[in-house]
Image (cartoon, rainbow, N blue to C red; front, side, top):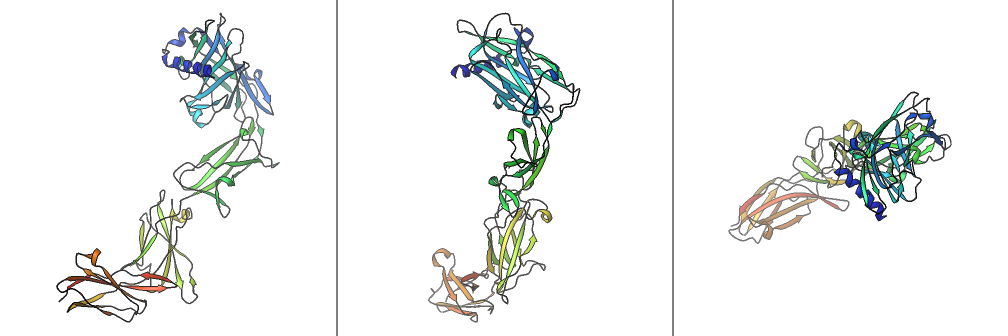
Length: 479
């Protein structure tokens, strides 16, 4: 294995060192034959492929080849799969695309990325070497067609000169164990299809693998996180119900990053024709950080922003005292803001003493068609409690007399007072559990100190306590 790696490295280093004109002064020529394609067609397991042998031409001496690097180009719209074979003993064959990224060893699937590059690079290395004069052909390559190929179609294979002519090189070893690098000339040849090459029709059936998705009813879905989503698929023959080996079909995805409906297409390959499609949903995650708060204008609902959202849906339901149950959720569409006030206009009203429950869901696109592409976050409950008016704060001897507007709708009131500028260290609170009380005397205060006072309502419901907004603060100096 060390010899293999050393040979590959030596060959790759040679590529970088070769001058641009090296191919014109080649020691040998690397050949790929052309001609009638039916002369080179083979068939295995019902599908047809083209076999061609890559070999060295012009060899006059017996050399031990240890490494060979060449770029092979062809039409990716006609050829979708390449495979190599070698009759030597222990050998190593690596394939990369023209960008230098490894595609695979020995068997090479021509995917979209490779098709854009238009070429594959083959690196051959032998642990023991091969006698290039006596052991031709050097490498056999097998190419599988895309579906049906029409008569008189020409398939051109080029070695080296589609990418860079200097990329064809070989490393040989003499009898003393010394390595020598040789330049290799390039060639281009064309195969002509002399008759229609028809693929075998198959009607595949495809479904999303349930192990890779969740389900909302019968809808398969994944949750958006900004990454491409490629859940596995299960492909069967629609006539027999038997599973189809993945090597006989390709899977492509579309619209599979942003929230929405992603599509999946399966196409038969390697001599078979036929296609099928399915889909899955990409949902935005639930909203988080939802909070509700009573303010003067109504009930403030706020939440954390959701990545990928263009807007949010607000859900609200109210507690019906007559039926002792929740009403049906109402739904309102909102903008990209992450807060909203219920009761802030004539179309959205809230009533004092009524309990409300809110939820927020993000949507990715047009809300009329896509508001369901998300999940409602945790529901938050509150009671609409109006803000009390602090009517007066009057100073007495070491005391303050506080008056406010009463409300019979709520359970009672909370009163807070503290020395001015010393809120953290002097804050005190009084709870008044009688809604009819609207006056309170704060006693045992320090003469000459200025105190701040505020009041709010609270309401108890089924073991929960809800609070209104604090009134405006008033200050007064004690006598």
